[in-house]
Length: 228
Image (tube, rainbow, N blue to C red; front, side, top):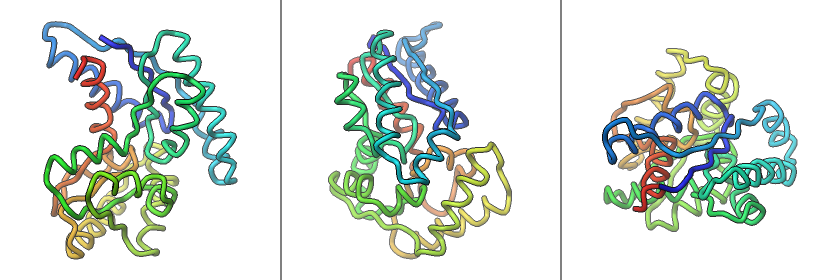
């Protein structure tokens, strides 16, 4: 079994999902009381949050690459950045750490393709919904990616940073997200990617299938660790 290195704390609310799902999948595959060989480096989220809002992505890359190097030195053989937004610096982390980094958009993209979906919605931070690093990587898997309009994107973004990363789950926000998913469905989306790892804490079902990025990323990591 390969050792998985998790760069977490982005935020820790969703890092919990990674640890749980990876261990569940390993136990399901190997039986008994088996669990995953894993390491977690948990960042101080406020530090990296301040950097991304200041558009200091080079420093974000340096910080997460340093975390990846430390995990490598402790024995990690594959790395995950436990976030959608922060996968923007995957290449920098992989180059510095010298071990593979499993990109979250690839894990999600493979699931979309396996389901035969041709048009999917995407919810996430403003960075994830609007910048090419994520949408283009998804589209390379052979399907169309659509996002909500500007006002809806801002609502989704604000709920993430003002509520979800702080562990706040508000019924009003759950209702708003469900309405946005319904609007994407009306626009032809066959499913919606929950492209922020905290969103799946807020909403688990909707009018069309939801694709929970953190769980899909974690499941792919477990499979990779077990030699799939």
